[in-house]
Amino acid sequence: MTAEKVEDALSALAPLLRVRPRLDNVCRLGGSWSAVHEHAQSGYAYFHIVVRGRATLDRSEGFPLDLGPGDILLLPHGNAHTMHAPGMPALVPSPVTTRRQGSFSFRTSLGAVPDVELVCGRLHFEAAPENLIVAALPDVIVLRVGEQPLTTRFDPLLAGIREELDGERAGALAIAENLATALFVMMLRSHLEASAPVEGLLRLLGQRTTAQAVTAMLRDPVHAWTLDELAHAAAASRATLVRAFRKAAGIAPLEFLMDLRLGLARQRLRTAHASLDQIAADAGYQSQGAFSRAFLRRYGVRPGQVRQDARVSAAT
Image (cartoon, rainbow, N blue to C red):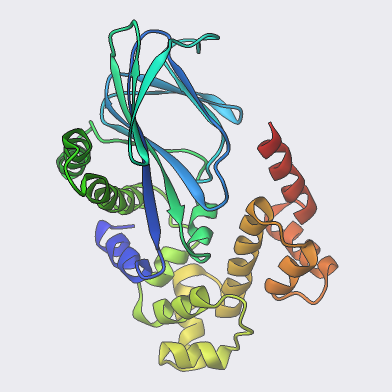
């Protein structure tokens, strides 16, 4: 996918991608430091920016990941993880002092010269539709900003965030969080430029006809859409809309709607407390059994297993 098409698709999605970053702390650490992050609450994703120095990410789901200066780490699903000094995480981490500034804090190692600086925070997704995008993303995304040509695009944002937080001037946190919003959209764009489109969604959003139908579905995925209604939203005939969908994503509009609903259902199974009957009904199924069979065909696992695995993960 070209950069131009990705940008057009993200522009079409922008009204629905209501993401609000929350900057939690700046960590200036040295010695045998480590920081444990529990599974984030529903609707949140973790991110860490390595301003200088090196750090290691540990997760129960994968191998350790080394991070260097300029790296931006995003955990789209808010998975539990540990950040620590390169090498084995310390059983007894070095003590730190914390200085708070409103809802933000500066954490600095005591008795050790800081050799790493991290900006840490969370992204809060404020509405349901974009969770379909997040659900389709991998568990970990790392952007190596130190590698050209990314550094020329991201350095001004990273520098701006750091300067605002260091300066402690009026409105600094609000400005830094707005810069972080732009940073996230640019990070998502760079990831999508380098990988396959998210389940055909960006290809569909890249064309006027299909984009209007998809946007209508995303705004109200529970609505009992008919092909006539979707064609009206797209200002196209039924046949034209079907051809456009098949050319862009290889499926018909109502097939895409089914995939969209199942994707949202999978996200709700992981994060919400609604009953399986309610989730099945919202996904457009008359019975939990029919929903379970469709879910199994799509993801190779039953809905109840997804919910159980999410509960086990949250409890560990």
